[in-house]
Amino acid sequence: MSNRIASLATPAALFCRSAAVALIAGIAHRIGFDEVEARLAARPAQEQALLVGATLVALFLAALLAAQAGWIGMLLFWLAVIVLAR
Image (cartoon, rainbow, N blue to C red; front, top):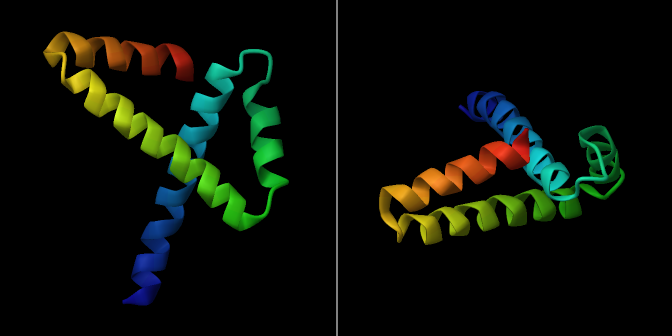
């Protein structure tokens, strides 16, 4: 059972890491995706997990805040996420 959980956790962790790097690179326009990825890889594993987790928690809290404005707020939220990640 633990091998199955580990095999599922690794792709999910990589997806979360890629999403966090894309959002950070979108906010910091002068730093590209590859450079953000390299800077994150240079940090210790515990700090990497903290940075990725904090980015995803901030994204979740922003989604909750946007949800308070109804479907228009969620539309603007997803538009902002798409623009940042592009």
